[in-house]
Length: 431
Image (cartoon, rainbow, N blue to C red; front, side, top):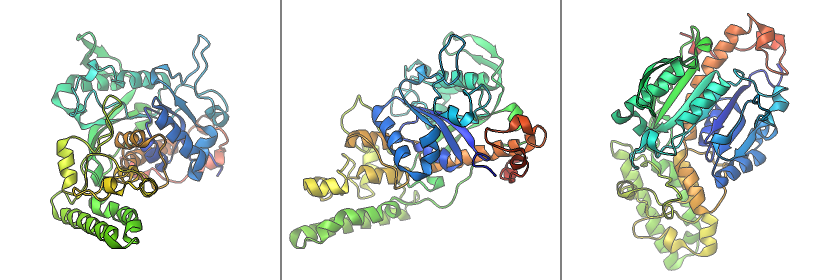
Protein backbone atom coordinates (compact mmCIF):
# COMPACT_ATOMS: atom_id res chain seq x y z
CA UNK A 1 0.00 0.00 0.00
CA UNK A 2 1.18 3.52 -0.81
CA UNK A 3 1.47 6.32 1.73
CA UNK A 4 -1.87 7.86 0.70
CA UNK A 5 -4.05 4.77 0.68
CA UNK A 6 -5.97 5.47 3.88
CA UNK A 7 -5.98 9.27 3.99
CA UNK A 8 -9.17 11.04 5.01
CA UNK A 9 -8.97 14.75 4.26
CA UNK A 10 -10.49 17.51 6.35
CA UNK A 11 -10.88 21.27 6.54
CA UNK A 12 -11.57 22.90 9.88
CA UNK A 13 -12.81 26.42 10.52
CA UNK A 14 -12.61 28.24 13.87
CA UNK A 15 -9.77 25.87 14.73
CA UNK A 16 -8.65 27.74 17.86
CA UNK A 17 -5.61 26.23 19.54
CA UNK A 18 -6.22 22.86 17.90
CA UNK A 19 -8.37 20.86 20.34
CA UNK A 20 -10.67 19.53 17.65
CA UNK A 21 -7.84 19.31 15.10
CA UNK A 22 -5.81 17.11 17.46
CA UNK A 23 -8.74 14.77 18.08
CA UNK A 24 -9.58 14.45 14.38
CA UNK A 25 -5.91 13.90 13.62
CA UNK A 26 -5.84 11.09 16.18
CA UNK A 27 -8.89 9.62 14.42
CA UNK A 28 -6.96 9.47 11.15
CA UNK A 29 -7.96 12.70 9.43
CA UNK A 30 -5.32 14.77 7.64
CA UNK A 31 -5.97 18.51 7.59
CA UNK A 32 -5.77 20.37 4.30
CA UNK A 33 -6.69 23.68 5.96
CA UNK A 34 -7.07 25.06 9.49
CA UNK A 35 -8.72 28.50 9.61
CA UNK A 36 -8.47 30.67 12.74
CA UNK A 37 -8.81 34.41 13.39
CA UNK A 38 -6.91 34.71 16.70
CA UNK A 39 -3.22 35.36 15.95
CA UNK A 40 -1.97 33.63 19.11
CA UNK A 41 -3.95 30.49 18.30
CA UNK A 42 -2.68 30.61 14.72
CA UNK A 43 0.90 30.63 15.97
CA UNK A 44 0.05 27.75 18.31
CA UNK A 45 -1.17 25.71 15.34
CA UNK A 46 1.77 26.64 13.14
CA UNK A 47 4.34 26.08 15.89
CA UNK A 48 3.13 22.60 16.75
CA UNK A 49 2.81 21.55 13.11
CA UNK A 50 6.39 22.74 12.55
CA UNK A 51 7.83 20.92 15.55
CA UNK A 52 5.88 17.70 16.07
CA UNK A 53 6.86 14.69 14.01
CA UNK A 54 3.35 13.23 14.04
CA UNK A 55 2.17 16.33 12.16
CA UNK A 56 4.65 15.90 9.28
CA UNK A 57 1.80 15.37 6.77
CA UNK A 58 0.27 18.72 7.72
CA UNK A 59 3.70 20.34 7.65
CA UNK A 60 3.85 19.49 3.95
CA UNK A 61 0.22 19.81 2.86
CA UNK A 62 -1.77 21.92 5.36
CA UNK A 63 -2.45 25.67 5.08
CA UNK A 64 -2.93 27.34 8.46
CA UNK A 65 -4.90 30.43 7.47
CA UNK A 66 -4.93 33.46 9.75
CA UNK A 67 -8.06 35.47 9.13
CA UNK A 68 -11.83 35.77 9.06
CA UNK A 69 -13.52 32.57 7.90
CA UNK A 70 -15.99 34.71 5.96
CA UNK A 71 -13.11 35.50 3.59
CA UNK A 72 -12.00 31.88 3.21
CA UNK A 73 -12.32 30.55 -0.34
CA UNK A 74 -11.66 26.79 -0.60
CA UNK A 75 -12.83 26.28 -4.19
CA UNK A 76 -11.59 28.31 -7.19
CA UNK A 77 -14.32 30.73 -8.25
CA UNK A 78 -15.47 31.49 -11.78
CA UNK A 79 -14.57 35.17 -11.47
CA UNK A 80 -10.91 34.29 -11.15
CA UNK A 81 -10.42 34.09 -7.40
CA UNK A 82 -7.96 31.35 -6.58
CA UNK A 83 -8.50 28.68 -3.96
CA UNK A 84 -7.03 29.32 -0.51
CA UNK A 85 -6.12 25.62 -0.41
CA UNK A 86 -2.55 26.08 -1.62
CA UNK A 87 -0.26 23.48 -0.08
CA UNK A 88 -2.88 20.75 -0.37
CA UNK A 89 -2.75 20.99 -4.16
CA UNK A 90 0.62 19.25 -4.01
CA UNK A 91 -1.14 16.28 -2.44
CA UNK A 92 -4.31 16.42 -4.52
CA UNK A 93 -2.45 17.05 -7.75
CA UNK A 94 -4.87 19.86 -8.62
CA UNK A 95 -7.10 22.47 -6.93
CA UNK A 96 -9.69 21.09 -4.52
CA UNK A 97 -13.01 20.40 -6.25
CA UNK A 98 -16.55 20.17 -4.94
CA UNK A 99 -17.42 16.79 -3.41
CA UNK A 100 -13.79 15.70 -2.94
CA UNK A 101 -13.25 16.63 0.71
CA UNK A 102 -14.00 13.98 3.33
CA UNK A 103 -14.85 16.18 6.33
CA UNK A 104 -15.72 19.81 7.02
CA UNK A 105 -15.50 20.52 10.75
CA UNK A 106 -15.85 23.55 12.95
CA UNK A 107 -16.26 24.55 16.56
CA UNK A 108 -18.18 27.72 15.69
CA UNK A 109 -18.20 30.44 18.38
CA UNK A 110 -20.23 29.47 21.43
CA UNK A 111 -21.13 32.87 23.01
CA UNK A 112 -24.35 33.19 20.93
CA UNK A 113 -25.69 30.08 22.70
CA UNK A 114 -23.75 29.93 25.98
CA UNK A 115 -25.58 30.03 29.31
CA UNK A 116 -22.81 32.34 30.49
CA UNK A 117 -23.78 34.95 27.88
CA UNK A 118 -26.92 36.67 26.62
CA UNK A 119 -27.87 33.77 24.32
CA UNK A 120 -28.68 36.00 21.36
CA UNK A 121 -28.36 33.06 18.97
CA UNK A 122 -28.82 34.06 15.33
CA UNK A 123 -28.90 37.73 16.36
CA UNK A 124 -25.33 37.56 17.67
CA UNK A 125 -22.76 38.83 15.16
CA UNK A 126 -20.46 35.98 16.19
CA UNK A 127 -22.92 33.32 14.96
CA UNK A 128 -21.04 31.44 12.24
CA UNK A 129 -23.57 28.67 11.57
CA UNK A 130 -24.60 30.46 8.34
CA UNK A 131 -20.97 30.46 7.17
CA UNK A 132 -20.35 26.78 7.83
CA UNK A 133 -23.58 25.98 5.97
CA UNK A 134 -22.33 28.05 3.02
CA UNK A 135 -19.07 26.13 3.09
CA UNK A 136 -20.94 22.82 3.26
CA UNK A 137 -22.80 23.85 0.10
CA UNK A 138 -19.63 25.03 -1.64
CA UNK A 139 -17.41 22.10 -0.66
CA UNK A 140 -20.11 19.40 -0.48
CA UNK A 141 -17.87 17.24 1.74
CA UNK A 142 -18.78 13.67 2.55
CA UNK A 143 -19.36 14.60 6.21
CA UNK A 144 -19.92 17.71 8.31
CA UNK A 145 -19.17 18.01 12.02
CA UNK A 146 -20.21 21.09 14.01
CA UNK A 147 -19.43 21.54 17.73
CA UNK A 148 -20.96 24.02 20.14
CA UNK A 149 -22.02 24.48 23.76
CA UNK A 150 -24.90 22.55 25.26
CA UNK A 151 -26.97 25.75 25.22
CA UNK A 152 -27.64 25.32 21.50
CA UNK A 153 -29.98 22.48 22.54
CA UNK A 154 -32.13 24.79 24.72
CA UNK A 155 -35.80 25.10 23.81
CA UNK A 156 -35.38 28.74 22.79
CA UNK A 157 -33.16 27.66 19.88
CA UNK A 158 -35.43 24.87 18.61
CA UNK A 159 -36.50 26.82 15.52
CA UNK A 160 -32.91 27.69 14.69
CA UNK A 161 -31.81 24.06 15.05
CA UNK A 162 -34.68 23.02 12.80
CA UNK A 163 -33.57 25.56 10.20
CA UNK A 164 -29.97 24.29 10.28
CA UNK A 165 -31.15 20.71 9.86
CA UNK A 166 -33.51 21.71 7.03
CA UNK A 167 -30.67 23.43 5.22
CA UNK A 168 -28.63 20.24 5.42
CA UNK A 169 -31.20 17.53 4.74
CA UNK A 170 -34.23 19.40 3.39
CA UNK A 171 -37.64 20.16 4.87
CA UNK A 172 -39.68 23.00 6.27
CA UNK A 173 -38.37 25.57 8.72
CA UNK A 174 -38.70 29.22 9.65
CA UNK A 175 -36.02 31.35 8.01
CA UNK A 176 -34.05 32.98 10.85
CA UNK A 177 -33.78 36.33 9.03
CA UNK A 178 -37.24 36.77 7.48
CA UNK A 179 -39.19 34.72 10.04
CA UNK A 180 -41.14 33.19 7.14
CA UNK A 181 -41.82 29.45 6.92
CA UNK A 182 -39.97 28.04 3.94
CA UNK A 183 -39.25 24.68 2.36
CA UNK A 184 -35.55 23.97 1.83
CA UNK A 185 -34.28 21.45 -0.71
CA UNK A 186 -31.34 20.58 1.49
CA UNK A 187 -27.73 19.97 0.58
CA UNK A 188 -27.93 16.20 0.28
CA UNK A 189 -27.11 15.25 3.87
CA UNK A 190 -28.64 13.10 6.55
CA UNK A 191 -28.30 14.69 9.99
CA UNK A 192 -27.29 12.01 12.49
CA UNK A 193 -28.97 13.87 15.35
CA UNK A 194 -27.49 16.62 17.48
CA UNK A 195 -25.91 14.78 20.39
CA UNK A 196 -24.72 16.20 23.71
CA UNK A 197 -21.51 14.45 24.76
CA UNK A 198 -20.02 14.79 28.24
CA UNK A 199 -16.23 15.14 28.15
CA UNK A 200 -15.76 13.20 31.40
CA UNK A 201 -17.21 10.12 29.65
CA UNK A 202 -14.17 10.11 27.37
CA UNK A 203 -11.35 10.32 29.89
CA UNK A 204 -11.30 14.11 30.21
CA UNK A 205 -11.07 15.09 33.91
CA UNK A 206 -13.64 17.83 33.44
CA UNK A 207 -17.41 18.24 33.33
CA UNK A 208 -17.76 19.74 29.86
CA UNK A 209 -20.94 18.87 27.95
CA UNK A 210 -20.69 19.75 24.24
CA UNK A 211 -23.35 19.63 21.56
CA UNK A 212 -22.12 17.96 18.36
CA UNK A 213 -23.95 17.80 15.04
CA UNK A 214 -22.86 15.19 12.53
CA UNK A 215 -24.27 15.14 9.01
CA UNK A 216 -23.21 12.68 6.31
CA UNK A 217 -24.01 12.82 2.62
CA UNK A 218 -26.84 10.47 1.76
CA UNK A 219 -24.94 8.95 -1.16
CA UNK A 220 -22.11 8.11 1.26
CA UNK A 221 -24.31 6.59 3.96
CA UNK A 222 -26.28 4.29 1.69
CA UNK A 223 -26.84 1.24 3.95
CA UNK A 224 -24.14 2.24 6.46
CA UNK A 225 -25.16 3.49 9.90
CA UNK A 226 -23.42 6.21 11.86
CA UNK A 227 -23.01 5.16 15.51
CA UNK A 228 -22.39 7.77 18.18
CA UNK A 229 -19.43 7.01 20.46
CA UNK A 230 -20.13 5.75 23.96
CA UNK A 231 -18.31 6.34 27.24
CA UNK A 232 -14.79 4.94 27.26
CA UNK A 233 -14.62 4.15 30.97
CA UNK A 234 -14.88 5.56 34.47
CA UNK A 235 -14.38 9.32 34.89
CA UNK A 236 -10.84 10.49 35.61
CA UNK A 237 -10.60 12.72 38.67
CA UNK A 238 -8.82 16.06 38.77
CA UNK A 239 -6.58 14.62 41.50
CA UNK A 240 -5.34 11.76 39.29
CA UNK A 241 -4.87 14.13 36.36
CA UNK A 242 -2.95 16.80 38.28
CA UNK A 243 -1.04 14.84 40.95
CA UNK A 244 2.21 14.46 39.02
CA UNK A 245 2.30 18.08 37.87
CA UNK A 246 1.51 19.37 41.37
CA UNK A 247 4.38 17.30 42.80
CA UNK A 248 6.72 18.82 40.21
CA UNK A 249 5.60 22.37 40.98
CA UNK A 250 6.20 22.02 44.73
CA UNK A 251 9.40 19.98 44.43
CA UNK A 252 11.90 22.90 44.25
CA UNK A 253 10.53 24.40 47.45
CA UNK A 254 10.46 21.07 49.30
CA UNK A 255 14.20 20.81 48.59
CA UNK A 256 14.97 24.22 50.11
CA UNK A 257 14.40 23.08 53.66
CA UNK A 258 13.40 25.30 56.55
CA UNK A 259 10.19 27.33 56.65
CA UNK A 260 9.76 27.32 52.87
CA UNK A 261 9.84 23.53 52.70
CA UNK A 262 7.47 23.28 55.66
CA UNK A 263 4.96 25.61 54.00
CA UNK A 264 5.31 23.84 50.65
CA UNK A 265 4.61 20.46 52.25
CA UNK A 266 1.66 21.87 54.16
CA UNK A 267 0.09 23.35 51.02
CA UNK A 268 0.77 20.28 48.86
CA UNK A 269 -0.61 17.89 51.49
CA UNK A 270 -3.70 20.03 51.90
CA UNK A 271 -4.32 20.07 48.13
CA UNK A 272 -3.92 16.29 47.92
CA UNK A 273 -6.26 15.75 50.86
CA UNK A 274 -9.02 17.90 49.40
CA UNK A 275 -8.66 16.70 45.80
CA UNK A 276 -8.50 13.06 46.85
CA UNK A 277 -11.49 13.44 49.14
CA UNK A 278 -13.49 14.82 46.22
CA UNK A 279 -13.11 11.47 44.41
CA UNK A 280 -15.75 10.00 46.75
CA UNK A 281 -18.39 12.49 45.61
CA UNK A 282 -20.99 11.53 43.03
CA UNK A 283 -19.11 13.53 40.37
CA UNK A 284 -15.96 11.47 41.12
CA UNK A 285 -13.90 14.61 41.76
CA UNK A 286 -14.02 15.67 38.12
CA UNK A 287 -13.15 19.33 37.55
CA UNK A 288 -15.80 21.92 36.61
CA UNK A 289 -15.97 23.37 33.11
CA UNK A 290 -13.01 25.56 32.20
CA UNK A 291 -14.05 28.97 30.93
CA UNK A 292 -11.80 30.66 28.42
CA UNK A 293 -13.48 34.04 28.43
CA UNK A 294 -12.87 36.71 25.80
CA UNK A 295 -10.79 39.77 25.07
CA UNK A 296 -13.66 41.95 26.31
CA UNK A 297 -13.00 40.80 29.88
CA UNK A 298 -9.98 41.13 32.16
CA UNK A 299 -7.30 38.62 33.01
CA UNK A 300 -7.85 34.90 32.98
CA UNK A 301 -9.48 33.04 35.85
CA UNK A 302 -11.27 29.72 36.23
CA UNK A 303 -14.78 31.00 35.66
CA UNK A 304 -17.75 32.53 37.50
CA UNK A 305 -18.43 32.22 41.23
CA UNK A 306 -20.03 28.78 40.97
CA UNK A 307 -17.01 27.40 39.09
CA UNK A 308 -14.59 28.97 41.56
CA UNK A 309 -16.50 27.33 44.42
CA UNK A 310 -16.24 23.96 42.67
CA UNK A 311 -12.49 24.45 42.23
CA UNK A 312 -12.21 25.40 45.91
CA UNK A 313 -13.70 22.01 46.77
CA UNK A 314 -10.80 20.50 44.82
CA UNK A 315 -8.28 22.55 46.80
CA UNK A 316 -7.57 24.94 43.91
CA UNK A 317 -7.79 28.73 43.90
CA UNK A 318 -9.74 29.88 40.84
CA UNK A 319 -9.05 33.61 41.07
CA UNK A 320 -6.35 33.56 38.42
CA UNK A 321 -3.85 31.50 36.48
CA UNK A 322 -0.39 30.74 37.85
CA UNK A 323 2.92 31.30 36.14
CA UNK A 324 4.41 28.21 34.57
CA UNK A 325 6.62 26.01 36.75
CA UNK A 326 9.84 27.54 35.39
CA UNK A 327 8.52 31.11 35.46
CA UNK A 328 7.31 30.73 39.03
CA UNK A 329 10.81 29.68 40.17
CA UNK A 330 12.45 32.41 38.10
CA UNK A 331 10.13 35.20 39.25
CA UNK A 332 9.85 33.85 42.81
CA UNK A 333 6.06 34.06 42.52
CA UNK A 334 5.39 31.00 44.69
CA UNK A 335 3.45 33.01 47.27
CA UNK A 336 0.92 33.93 44.58
CA UNK A 337 1.03 30.72 42.58
CA UNK A 338 1.38 27.95 45.17
CA UNK A 339 1.28 29.12 48.77
CA UNK A 340 -2.14 30.76 48.96
CA UNK A 341 -4.34 29.74 51.87
CA UNK A 342 -7.04 28.95 49.32
CA UNK A 343 -4.74 26.53 47.52
CA UNK A 344 -2.55 26.62 44.39
CA UNK A 345 -3.68 28.25 41.19
CA UNK A 346 -3.49 26.18 38.01
CA UNK A 347 -0.85 26.84 35.39
CA UNK A 348 -1.74 26.94 31.68
CA UNK A 349 -0.10 23.52 31.37
CA UNK A 350 -2.37 22.11 34.08
CA UNK A 351 -5.45 23.67 32.49
CA UNK A 352 -4.41 21.91 29.27
CA UNK A 353 -4.27 18.61 31.17
CA UNK A 354 -7.80 19.24 32.45
CA UNK A 355 -8.87 19.94 28.86
CA UNK A 356 -7.33 16.71 27.55
CA UNK A 357 -4.51 18.17 25.43
CA UNK A 358 -1.46 15.95 24.84
CA UNK A 359 1.62 16.85 26.89
CA UNK A 360 3.69 17.87 23.85
CA UNK A 361 1.21 20.47 22.55
CA UNK A 362 2.59 23.96 23.27
CA UNK A 363 0.68 27.25 23.33
CA UNK A 364 1.83 30.62 21.99
CA UNK A 365 1.31 34.12 23.35
CA UNK A 366 1.27 35.49 26.89
CA UNK A 367 -0.18 33.64 29.85
CA UNK A 368 -3.69 35.05 29.47
CA UNK A 369 -3.74 34.43 25.70
CA UNK A 370 -2.57 30.86 26.25
CA UNK A 371 -5.15 30.18 28.94
CA UNK A 372 -7.97 31.49 26.76
CA UNK A 373 -6.89 29.17 23.96
CA UNK A 374 -7.05 26.23 26.37
CA UNK A 375 -10.29 27.27 28.05
CA UNK A 376 -12.15 27.76 24.77
CA UNK A 377 -11.04 24.47 23.23
CA UNK A 378 -12.98 21.34 22.29
CA UNK A 379 -11.39 18.50 24.33
CA UNK A 380 -9.25 16.41 21.96
CA UNK A 381 -10.43 13.02 23.34
CA UNK A 382 -14.07 13.91 22.59
CA UNK A 383 -13.18 15.12 19.10
CA UNK A 384 -11.24 11.88 18.56
CA UNK A 385 -14.21 9.76 19.62
CA UNK A 386 -16.58 11.52 17.21
CA UNK A 387 -13.91 11.58 14.52
CA UNK A 388 -13.44 7.82 14.78
CA UNK A 389 -17.19 7.29 14.41
CA UNK A 390 -17.23 9.44 11.27
CA UNK A 391 -14.10 7.77 9.91
CA UNK A 392 -15.72 4.35 10.35
CA UNK A 393 -18.55 5.41 8.06
CA UNK A 394 -16.28 7.00 5.45
CA UNK A 395 -13.95 4.01 5.33
CA UNK A 396 -16.85 1.60 5.08
CA UNK A 397 -18.31 3.69 2.26
CA UNK A 398 -14.95 3.69 0.50
CA UNK A 399 -14.81 -0.10 0.72
CA UNK A 400 -18.31 -0.36 -0.72
CA UNK A 401 -17.49 1.92 -3.63
CA UNK A 402 -13.93 0.87 -4.41
CA UNK A 403 -14.58 -2.50 -6.07
CA UNK A 404 -17.38 -0.99 -8.20
CA UNK A 405 -15.54 2.01 -9.60
CA UNK A 406 -11.89 1.80 -8.72
CA UNK A 407 -10.58 4.37 -11.25
CA UNK A 408 -13.04 7.04 -10.04
CA UNK A 409 -12.54 6.53 -6.33
CA UNK A 410 -8.74 6.58 -6.17
CA UNK A 411 -6.97 9.42 -4.46
CA UNK A 412 -3.75 10.71 -6.06
CA UNK A 413 -0.82 8.31 -5.68
CA UNK A 414 -3.16 5.36 -4.94
CA UNK A 415 -3.17 2.17 -6.96
CA UNK A 416 -6.10 -0.03 -7.90
CA UNK A 417 -4.59 -3.03 -6.17
CA UNK A 418 -4.08 -1.04 -2.98
CA UNK A 419 -7.71 0.03 -3.03
CA UNK A 420 -8.94 -3.50 -3.57
CA UNK A 421 -6.77 -4.80 -0.74
CA UNK A 422 -7.85 -2.18 1.81
CA UNK A 423 -8.59 -3.50 5.28
CA UNK A 424 -12.09 -3.74 6.66
CA UNK A 425 -11.66 -0.83 9.09
CA UNK A 426 -15.29 0.27 8.85
CA UNK A 427 -17.03 -3.03 9.44
CA UNK A 428 -18.38 -1.91 12.82
CA UNK A 429 -20.12 1.05 11.20
CA UNK A 430 -22.32 -1.03 8.93
CA UNK A 431 -25.95 -1.50 9.85
